[in-house]
Length: 142
Image (cartoon, rainbow, N blue to C red):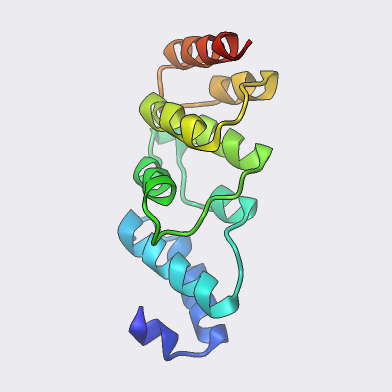
């Protein structure tokens, strides 16, 4: 972090852009680089940043997105995830059931029809199990 703090904002932003989409970068490094980028630029994490996180649903690869989301939710030193509908849909579309359930507890967002539809697009988790879990959560809220 210290080394990146010594560089210009433009350098850090370019470094982040190049590393963010690189599928060979581990989630810890990706989070570290994102944290440095956000600190240097004074920005916050956005929906589009999470949309651009590497993902290959066809080959069931989410490049440790589960771990990234879990760390952002649980560890103070990681950047806060925005509480938007799109972010929640991204998590439901790309993560395992355990990560999704934990994320929804952290965010305390109600389960909507849009989230059920996002679950149908999930290529990582068992869709039926995920849908049942979301329906159960929705029913408990009522």
